[in-house]
Amino acid sequence: MQTLTKKSLFWDVAKVDPRKNEKFIIERILNYGDEADFRWARESYGDKIVKETLLKSQALDNKSLSFWCQYFNLDQNKCLKNQSTKKQGWFWKR
Image (tube, rainbow, N blue to C red; front, side, top):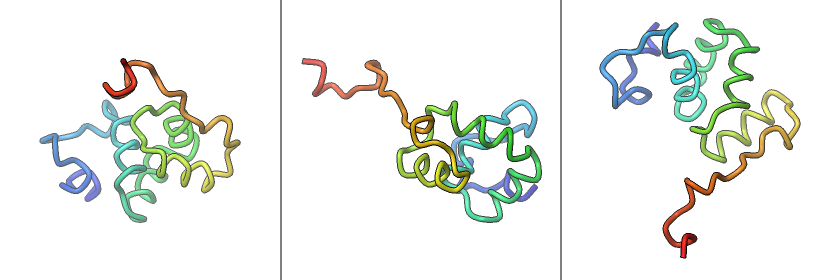
Protein backbone atom coordinates (compact mmCIF):
# COMPACT_ATOMS: atom_id res chain seq x y z
CA MET A 1 0.00 0.00 0.00
CA GLN A 2 2.97 2.28 -0.37
CA THR A 3 1.34 3.53 -3.57
CA LEU A 4 -1.44 5.24 -1.60
CA THR A 5 1.05 7.33 0.38
CA LYS A 6 3.10 8.65 -2.54
CA LYS A 7 3.13 12.44 -2.71
CA SER A 8 3.96 12.23 -6.43
CA LEU A 9 0.51 10.69 -6.97
CA PHE A 10 -1.62 12.31 -4.29
CA TRP A 11 -0.04 15.70 -3.67
CA ASP A 12 -3.38 17.43 -3.22
CA VAL A 13 -5.15 15.07 -0.81
CA ALA A 14 -4.34 14.06 2.75
CA LYS A 15 -5.72 10.52 2.61
CA VAL A 16 -7.38 8.31 0.02
CA ASP A 17 -9.67 5.37 0.66
CA PRO A 18 -8.87 2.49 -1.71
CA ARG A 19 -12.56 1.49 -1.98
CA LYS A 20 -14.34 4.86 -1.97
CA ASN A 21 -11.79 6.56 -4.26
CA GLU A 22 -11.17 3.67 -6.66
CA LYS A 23 -11.65 5.67 -9.88
CA PHE A 24 -9.58 8.62 -8.62
CA ILE A 25 -6.70 6.35 -7.57
CA ILE A 26 -6.64 4.46 -10.88
CA GLU A 27 -6.71 7.69 -12.89
CA ARG A 28 -3.80 9.12 -10.92
CA ILE A 29 -1.79 5.92 -11.36
CA LEU A 30 -2.47 5.83 -15.11
CA ASN A 31 -1.44 9.48 -15.46
CA TYR A 32 1.47 9.77 -13.02
CA GLY A 33 2.34 6.35 -11.62
CA ASP A 34 5.30 4.12 -12.23
CA GLU A 35 5.46 0.39 -12.95
CA ALA A 36 5.09 -0.61 -9.29
CA ASP A 37 2.01 1.60 -8.91
CA PHE A 38 0.42 0.09 -12.01
CA ARG A 39 1.16 -3.43 -10.77
CA TRP A 40 -0.48 -2.50 -7.44
CA ALA A 41 -3.60 -1.19 -9.25
CA ARG A 42 -3.92 -4.36 -11.30
CA GLU A 43 -3.50 -6.57 -8.23
CA SER A 44 -5.90 -4.48 -6.14
CA TYR A 45 -8.66 -3.77 -8.64
CA GLY A 46 -8.10 -6.18 -11.54
CA ASP A 47 -7.67 -5.53 -15.25
CA LYS A 48 -11.41 -5.22 -15.87
CA ILE A 49 -11.87 -2.28 -13.48
CA VAL A 50 -8.67 -0.59 -14.70
CA LYS A 51 -9.83 -0.85 -18.34
CA GLU A 52 -13.33 0.42 -17.49
CA THR A 53 -11.84 3.40 -15.67
CA LEU A 54 -9.52 4.06 -18.60
CA LEU A 55 -12.37 4.12 -21.11
CA LYS A 56 -14.67 6.28 -18.96
CA SER A 57 -12.07 8.71 -17.65
CA GLN A 58 -12.13 12.39 -18.49
CA ALA A 59 -9.07 13.05 -16.32
CA LEU A 60 -6.40 11.27 -18.39
CA ASP A 61 -4.19 13.33 -20.65
CA ASN A 62 -4.03 12.34 -24.32
CA LYS A 63 -0.52 10.90 -24.07
CA SER A 64 -1.44 8.58 -21.18
CA LEU A 65 -4.74 7.64 -22.78
CA SER A 66 -3.03 6.67 -26.03
CA PHE A 67 -0.34 4.67 -24.22
CA TRP A 68 -2.75 2.67 -22.06
CA CYS A 69 -5.06 1.95 -24.97
CA GLN A 70 -2.08 0.52 -26.84
CA TYR A 71 -0.98 -1.41 -23.75
CA PHE A 72 -4.38 -3.05 -23.31
CA ASN A 73 -4.81 -3.46 -27.09
CA LEU A 74 -8.09 -1.53 -27.09
CA ASP A 75 -9.84 -0.17 -30.15
CA GLN A 76 -8.53 3.36 -30.80
CA ASN A 77 -12.05 4.59 -31.57
CA LYS A 78 -13.12 3.68 -28.04
CA CYS A 79 -10.14 5.52 -26.64
CA LEU A 80 -10.65 8.81 -28.43
CA LYS A 81 -11.93 11.53 -26.15
CA ASN A 82 -14.74 13.75 -27.31
CA GLN A 83 -13.86 17.32 -26.44
CA SER A 84 -16.54 18.91 -24.34
CA THR A 85 -17.48 22.46 -25.28
CA LYS A 86 -17.28 23.31 -21.59
CA LYS A 87 -13.61 22.40 -21.54
CA GLN A 88 -12.62 24.51 -24.52
CA GLY A 89 -10.27 27.39 -23.85
CA TRP A 90 -11.40 30.99 -23.86
CA PHE A 91 -9.74 31.53 -27.24
CA TRP A 92 -12.26 29.27 -28.99
CA LYS A 93 -15.32 30.86 -27.38
CA ARG A 94 -15.31 34.05 -29.42
